[in-house]
Image (cartoon, rainbow, N blue to C red):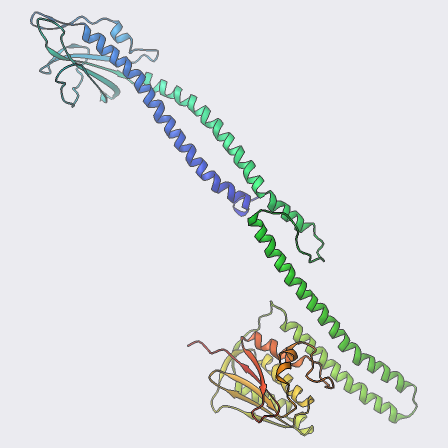
Length: 457
């Protein structure tokens, strides 16, 4: 499993980051604490060493004199064999005695009483810790001030610091391991409802669209409700598809049954005239069935939510003129006056030309089938509009929305399939246009107008 591509890995990454930051801070604190503890321990030894040396300082022959006991320096030279340096300095800063000339402390001199100062110094490339005790002789003859300067290398301090750090590190690592284990268990437990949801979805029959019934936390409950809403929409879509398939099969079965019955009847006759009449009936019925099949295919493609037509600039005037040319002969033979009302200048919109021709063909066919004697195709601007107007019986206002549904006829005795206006409505929606059904300007008939959106300026 790729951690960057999984929710489990992302949660671990985001939760491990502050955990690692906290661990780094704990390690830094442990290191600082170990160093401070080691310094405190050895600074006490410096304190004891300077005090032991200061107690041996005497006043002899009008000058400071020191008889250094070996134990005063041995307490600083432990198992690490540190090097120890000392120096006795009078009030004027003159070196009296010692095995090294150690530097003075930049701090101010004490006015009275003992003063002990610490600092880190470097001498001949060696890192030293220096302690300076400022005091004076406790002698009734003289109260001469002086300084005892003692320094030693840091081997013992570093060894003690590492030992303390190792002991703290063991505790930190144990706590880190416990925190990581707890984190893994917590993330796994938090994602367990998501795993149950995944298993429930995988175990479902792919043919069922029932809602999910699973107890989940609030965050996943919202996901479950979203899935249930999707399933509900899919149930409605499937119901519409089943109804569409049922209606389509009925629409196709009726003419096919008529063709079969007419052919069987003709086979029982011997007269050629009867055969010709039957063939003409079969031919006309076949044409209607073929058109119905083409309309069903068009409507199915338009109802596909993933279908996106390729739109190109199309002149609406050219579409109207082409539709009139394609249907003029059929309308003229049927005694219908088919005309065009175009604009003097081109009016282009982003559209699919064959779909606009399909829409105009369905509107002309509807008008012709429902008794229109005059059909006018036209174009209007501001906003761009394409309209078809006839002088037929029209559609009552209360039924204009119903006729946009598939297989819904304007009249029960019509010859149409009830798909024409549904196809036109689907084409309008694919172009972002609005389809309006209204009464003709003459007060009789139907006016269907496709209103396109304004082109961006």
